[in-house]
Image 1 (cartoon, rainbow, N blue to C red):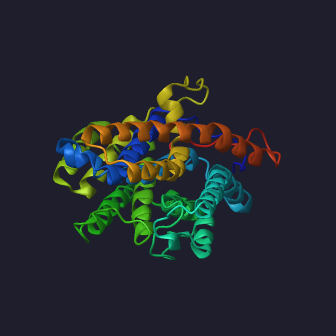
Image 2 (image 1 turned 180 degrees about the vertical axis):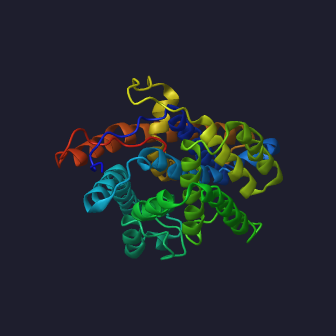
Image 3 (image 1 turned 90 degrees about the vertical axis):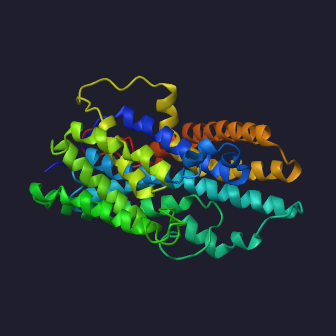
Length: 366
């Protein structure tokens, strides 16, 4: 039985680059909410108005990547599970906690300066604590507060806590029964999508945990099907058409089906002895996607201040969208480079490995 500190699976650069496109889609969606660019450019509306589905892509990718990283080296036993959770904690908590504290400082300074804060009741202590400890999307609250995108981080954390048990069940599942899992997953996704046509799959604090669980489990199952050769690539290409078809038809579940086909199509198995992928801009921005997501609230605050002072026309709103998008990427990259990576290394380096080399973070996680 392998110990908890053996070598990790090599990083899949294509899946890391996919993270950039997914987070870019999410950011454009959030930028479009106040800027309403999609109203002036209706041809872009199917993409801009459904950018929240980028989060669904991350949920699928998270399950898929965790299978690639741990399917062949499961974190068994107390030591293995503790090591897995320690790595997940080191990955997500430092930047999340710092963003929360920075936002609290920003809100405090704004109140001290007499600035008008929309719905100040959103910044209460109870909601701060729920969000700080990442239980805010566990049906514990019904309103978005503080760094509201953290709802997705909250359900991911729940997934990490449950992952060893879910993985154990998936590994023990007979090979012939595995194809039934993604079919059941998509049936659940379609049922959730059909609940309210005005919401689609855009559930967050309420039913967001269910949305995540269906897609996370589906991603895990697709990961096993892919690595065991049970998912022919030729069968995935027609399914990929569901991605644009779902956007045009405004059918979220169909779009998610296309995203689920895209992920294994992009995967390129990397030999264990292969040299790391040469960093490029898309790879770096994919690695920084977590920082981009958590830093969005600060870009949004700046955008709100601008829109309070000016009412730009369509060209101005397009310019603000481009500027906000680039600012989000820059802020996320700085957060990744100078906070996320150093904090991750520091936390993982505090306890020396018991065996060879520590397992590095598996790429493609949300």
